[in-house]
Length: 377
Length: 121
View (spheres, rainbow over the protein chains, first blue to last red):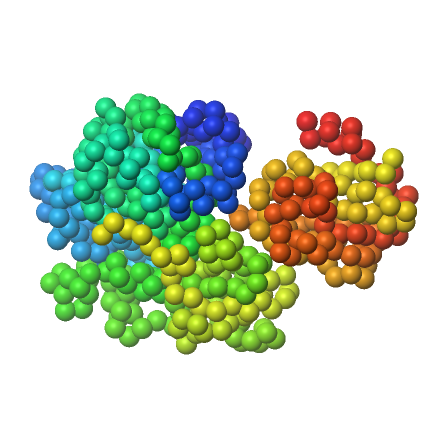
């Protein structure tokens, strides 16, 4: 795609003015990093607070045609394995759209706000997800919030910085969602993120986005952070990247995401199954799977990246799976990776071997996350 | 002239029948801070275009190619512990390999500093 056909978020000019290195990402021109570079940006988020533009992600409001919030929740449960019905207003939860084989079409956040559900979906899956919702949920209205930007403020000092604009965020807890005035803009703020740090995702009207972002950047704790550090932060935090670590061929159980499938949707639950691929996924929950997503800590300093094959031995005779994402972890101060391995090799501390440029690089299966999460529970 | 540049953003400083090779300041800025550098072993005979090193940033791995035919003589041992040296001083302390020139006449095809400056402008 040529540069001039790329979409711009409402913060495009702010990125360019700030020296952002703009790259194509899911059809948008997005900042990979700014002048300080990925390492420094990553460390800034872990020690202070970083502001990310994630406006390329899709924001969708889902309502039942009846207007009833419970009906919308029941409807969405036809597409996802999470318990949406018991999600209280002002709370958010992580789930996946699944296909008939139990594979993952996309992963998403779902918030209940009064009689509506607010969904945040991946940029690259936006069009397909919206079509899926419209096709499958004829009893619902699917409103794409194209006029809203999405910012993420992440890091141990995020609360202090945001509280100067929106004091009430101080008493929000992890995965809570509220409508909050943010410096004069009508914000929908959730205490969540994609870094493993405490932080917030802040939805504001597109017209207010640049003003709100600039006010946040005036706070001494806050620096702009690009997609490069967003990727290394989420990798250290053990979080999946759709298209790399999860996709239509991986199930939530293979992906070690079964924590996101509540009891009510499992076998014997009050609303057992009823989502695409439930037969496969519910069986896997009880009977296990042949491969699992794991963390991988390679020996030495060489990053082992997505696509690298894994073996049980240095002679590369017994294949075990492959790496799905990998990078150098600036906080871990070592290479970190995620991989799918045969279940017999999925236990923490199991030694495996990655093939890197024809060489055998020893690695051990590592519990996720690599860097402890610091959510405000 | 003893300093040459390539379109792959490497520099060579010729010292007798050998040359020191590194990446240019421009390339270092593009790559961002390096986290790992791996070089071919001393004694490896390569042709122009063969990989002589891999440099890795947080985000990606990039090959460094032999600008001309020759043999790897030595690699910068400092880079194993401090790969960021390439980022901070790419055209000095951050040199990557020493290289014996098999066909010095191949240098004629490379750029001088002015031509390289025009190339990246």
